[in-house]
Length: 303
Image (cartoon, rainbow, N blue to C red; front, side):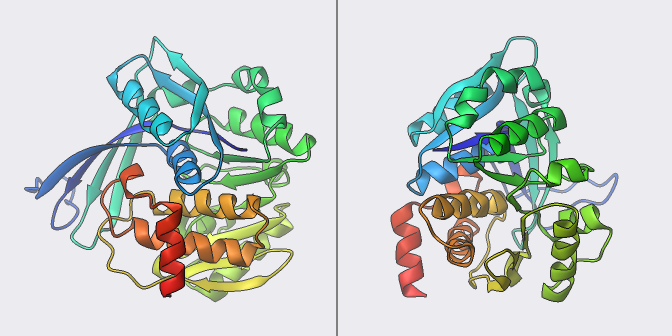
């Protein structure tokens, strides 16, 4: 069982030729809504790719919250430990896409900001019964830290996606079996430039010196740099025509954790995750873009 402690959002996405400048209005070409949130996306990806997934987090008592929970349940994610708050709305993400498929995102946390340490303690037995616990930084830092501490004390695999960027201390990094930032987050975490494999390696080594056991830095179209106990090097990305990069990192993390849980080594798991993310970026939306296990296996056979 893979348990994700994190955010659940409702996404509102607009497409335009480019990102607007300050004070500028642009006419968009498309608009759609979808269920998202980094935590929910990762749990959705685990379930869609054949893993057993459980979600821990918070939504509001509103139509967005109902939609987010229903989306997860449809693919088999256990949502019985998601708290429903009456006093705050479900989190939302406002996403802009340019003509190349790149995104700019504003997240309004809503209920996600109400997840506290005491909420995590209430589900400590659930965390201890999991094989892997995944967290991000889209809820509160205290909830993330306590979830990782409980999982680590129980000898469970811990994965931290340090996104969106929030300063974190070495105590949290030392609880992580895997830390998986993108190049921008890795640069902010380390103060080092990160834009290619050599600079990613330097940043990954810096994070390991701070306590992380293994580090993966995703580099978009270049692939992912692995700095792990088993293997260090670049796992190249697959070349595809990107339409929407929203949730590509979440798909990667869900896919990577799923394959690790099946016994794959980190390099094999990362290649599988690159394939899943490659398929996802050819489709619009967050959760609607997540491929099935059959699609990823077929993609890998063809490549």
